Length: 345
Ligand code: SF4
Ligand code: SF4
Image 1 (cartoon, rainbow, N blue to C red):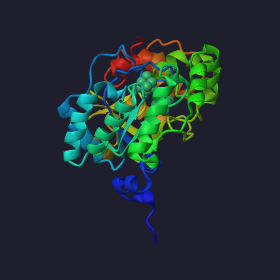
Image 2: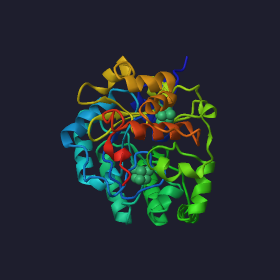
Image 3: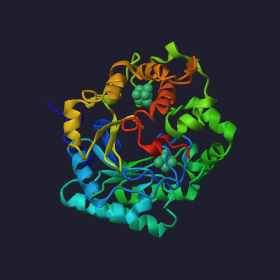
Image 4: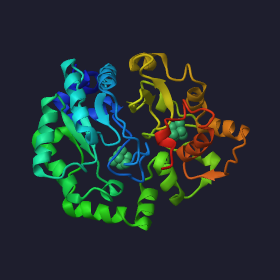
């Protein structure tokens, strides 16, 4: 009987089906290289921007975190922030990781660095030489508000040429379509309408900039809202914290392990990621257990007990979670962190 592709090791899946398909089949685990970014998208759950500290993961940690991520048998990538801002540092980590069989499968980027044909060709070929199989390139009104259409078009075209189409997790968007996305992104009313039609999780900058554009709904109606990656549930958010179910998991430059942005569920310096996953993230941390068992309603109750004046309605379950977490963060900064995600700047 043929083995289901998703039951095969991730490297085989990437080799056979490509990065684009492997992401869906194996799900993902990433190194958040930095919280700094070339741009500041309104929907950014990690609240990244050019104003974030000039900090990226250290060489030693970067290689070690890649090794840990590789132990998960997920599709591994480097994300951010915009890791290409630290191109030399990122390449050094990719090269060293490749030597121990832990190169990332792909790099996630907003394409803002793609200023010429030569840069695109050179960087992609250098990535390929370090064992990177592909790239994920964003395209939507939030990104295109900042990223010129020709850079995104160039980034996609060269990615297909160097990595092959199946290894490019990105839509083939024409210059005209990119210009249209740019015009939506630059028009506050059209952005508001777009965010109502395609709502991100209202956390981080999305919680600050976009949540108010969507209508409030009574607390009881939020229970079945989709979570980070779909999966309607009842009150609790178990699938976001269960190692077998979670769609993605990240290690940030400080070693913080996160699934939902802004809830630190472990420390990769303390023990390897797979050990955290095997033990269960909710077993040692009461705040994680609350989300796992009761969802953000437990955070709301905790915040109320500390004096939080909760509203009767929020536009989304995650939006309610975000508001309660912001209130609770001063008391629980080690779990509701890091500062970059909550800092309004
Ligand atoms: S969504 Fe991506 S490109 Fe946009 S600010 Fe956040 S990290 Fe940067
Ligand atoms: S409600 Fe909170 S814990 Fe649940 S998925 Fe949304 S952000 Fe994560």
